[in-house]
Length: 252
Ligand code: G3P
Ligand code: MG
Image 1 (cartoon, rainbow, N blue to C red):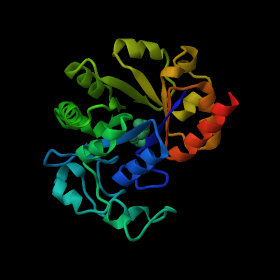
Image 2: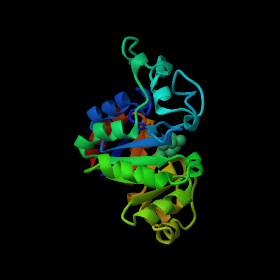
Image 3: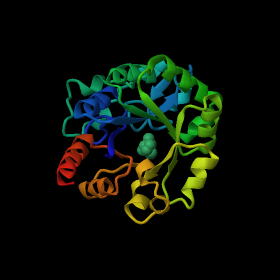
Image 4: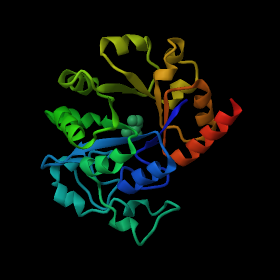
């Protein structure tokens, strides 16, 4: 049965990549969570999608030019006042979480966790080892996979520990996908929804049951991919996706 992953937690209804968003996804009963990491000037791993704090916080600037203490001054909730659940009493005081804080929150739930390395991290020498160490220290019991659009990062992760699960992120149909899996020792692909909704090379090579698909938010697409029995659907609306899966299960 297709797993449901909360993308950046429950980013459709809660401030992305924050503990509130992860708590929401966990309360929804997700099988997994996807998040993105960045690293501060003083070498602390934080959970954030962009290389700058501009879009998702009250501040501005590049993450790698700011200390953790500076980033902790910012609000990670105030930019999301357009959301229905926005609470003016609590959301403005939401902080950007560290990866450690996030692992501590998620760990007891023993779910799957996908940590995405954004391509800008390729500029930070040794980032792979820093993340692996953090997960080793605080992520015990979690089934962790590492993904990136930047294949060299995945290869360096594998070189550090051949047991780690790596997933190549792509947003297009890829000819001969199995060749990539075997050549680069990848566990899977994380593919954007568009190629997967049609006839893809992944389907032709009977790989759908191994593929996680992002970011799938509309009911029709979720239902199509449930039918195709992909390995996982990553969605900003995990509550809705889980309800759709419940209905789908009753029908099959
Ligand atoms: O990991 C799947 C998806 O998150 C990749 O794109 O830009 O949302 O991180 P993005
Ligand atoms: Mg991501």
